[in-house]
Image (cartoon, rainbow, N blue to C red):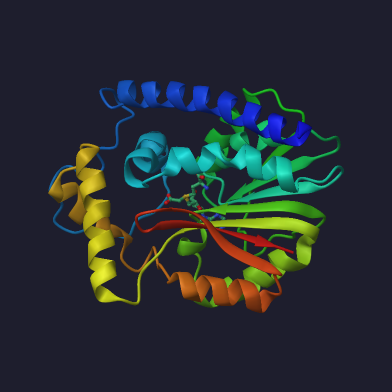
Length: 272
Ligand code: GEK
C-alpha cells in the first residue's frame, strides 16, 4: 500500500513538470528553438544526422513529432521505482538531451545508483551534460560520448532505449539486445520505445495518416513532413511489434509486453 502511494505521488510531481514543459514548448514555438529545419524547399535532401542544428531545436522537434512522448516520459519514474535495485546501474542508450535520464532520476529512491547516459552525437552529449548537471539527483549521472553497440553494460537494473534502436543498423540489433540482457540483473527491466511499422498495409496507412495529422496539428507543413520523411529514409528503420517481441524473447527475457502505444509509437517492457 505504501508503495502504491509513493508511485501516485511521483506521477503527480511529474504531471507538474509536464505542464511546465508544455508551457515552455508553446513559448519556444515562437523563438529560435523552434524546429524549422525542413520548412524551406530543398533541392536535395541529405540523410538525417544528429548534428548541431538538430540539437538546437531537438526538444521542440521530438515533442511535436513523437505522439505521446511527454506522457511516455512521465511514466518512467513509476517504472524506475518498480525495477530499480540499490547499488546498481541504469542505462539511457541514445540519451540525446537526457529527457529519459531526468525522468528516471525522479523515480530513484534507493542508494548507490548510477545512471549512465550514452550517445554517439558529440553535440547531443555536450548539451546533455549541461542540462543534466543543472538538476539535483540522488543518483550519480555520467553522460558519455559512445556508440551503444560498442559499450559495456553491467550490473544494470534498468536499461532504457527511447526511440534509438530504430537508428541502429538492423544486423546490430540482435547482438545489442543480447548484450543488454546479459548486463541486466535478474528482475531488472529493459524499456524499448520505437516507431513501429505494421505488416497489415491498411493498418500501416491508417497509423501513418494519424501520425501526419498529429504533426500538422502541431504546426508542421506538408512540405516539412515530406522533406523530413525523405531525410529519414534508410536512416530510421522501423520494425513490426512482432519482430521486436520475437527478438526480445529470443534474448531470454521472461516477460515481454507492450505497456504504451500512441499511434505508430510503441514502448515495450521486457523483464529478466
Ligand atoms: C529521448 N532517447 O529524448 N550509439 C549511441 N547513440 C546513438 C546511436 C548509437 N549507435 N545511434 C543513434 N544514437 C531520447 C531520444 S533520439 C530519437 C533519442 C529521435 C542517438 C542519436 O545521436 C540520437 O541522439 C538518439 O540516438 C535518438 O528520450 O530523434 O527520434
